Image 1 (spheres, helix red, strand yellow):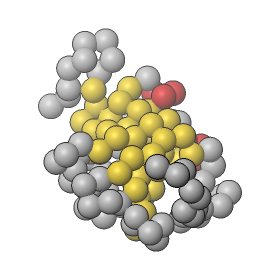
Image 2: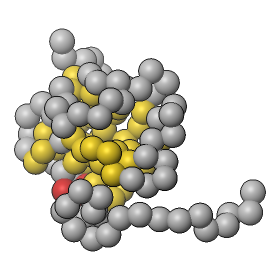
Image 3: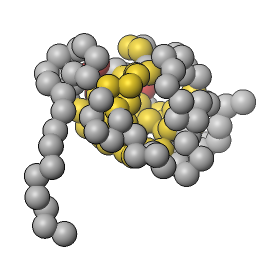
Image 4: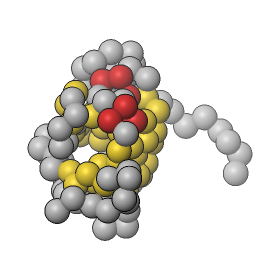
Amino acid sequence: MSGAYLGQWGSEGAGDGQFEEPLGVALDVVGDVYVADSQNQRVQKFSGAGAYLTQFGTPGSGNGQLNTASGVAVDASGLVYVTDTNNHRAQKSARRARPSRHWTPTPIHRSTGSRSR
């Protein structure tokens, strides 16, 4: 592994493909890239080549809302997990890595580790 620079994408801002303090990144099984855009309270999804695809999350404390998305992970089945730092929780998407602006999470409760149903 050479560590050679391969490219970048994004700029500062709140538009599609822009970031305000990106804190986490994850890849899904098809090579799409998810970025936790902490201060824009969202997760953005890009193709492996860096083309903007979609985003999910809005500011707030309700289901699907975020208050400082600080990390993101994607499991083998395509479920997306987001650490929602200032809401003191992690959320799981019900959609399996399909582009959608609608995101219905299942909150994982910190005190018990159990999931809401």
